[in-house]
Structure formats: C-alpha cells, structure tokens
Length: 103
Image (cartoon, rainbow, N blue to C red; front, side):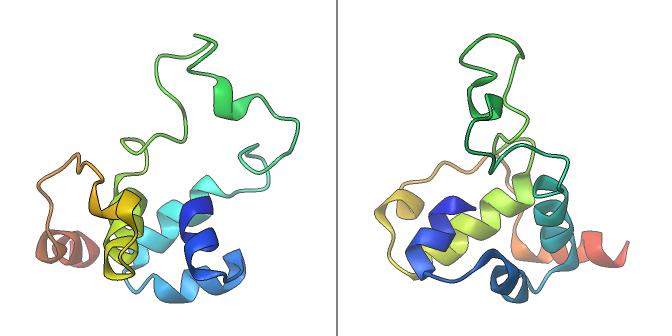
C-alpha cells in the first residue's frame, strides 16, 4: 500500500474509499490490522522471507492478490511505471472479482 500512498499522496484512511469492491477493502484491512507489523519502523516483518524465516512473505502479492491487482490497476491508470510493468499472478478479471462479491 505504500506505493499507492506515495503515488497519490493520500492517507491510508482515505485510501479505503477508493476500494469500491468490498473484498479488496477487506483484504487491505486484514493486512493493516494493528497486530500486524507491516508499518512498524523497527520490525523485521518486511525481511522474514529474506532471512529465510518463512517460505514467503506474509505480505506478498500472492497472499493479498486482490489488493495487488487493485493497486496496480490504479497505479496503471496514474501511469506508474512500476504498475504498468507489474506481473499479474492470476487471470482474474473485474467480472470474476465482482462475482466473488455476490457469491
């Protein structure tokens, strides 16, 4: 989420208003729970995979697929080079995401 916050200049609390699909917002809220260490300055959480303490980062794109797709869709609309070059891990399209919402 740090990338989109830096790109747009808005606060995390306002960022959720941009998430029009409930599942995307729920994933983001789960990722940013107070018990998580993602934003703690002296946390090792960002380095767990690099330190080989876990097989994959708990904050990886695969773990939060909908947030990853949403972030890079918005970033691409804002012509972020990183988002334009982002790899997509799923063949989900917007219609499939909406179907999950109503399932």
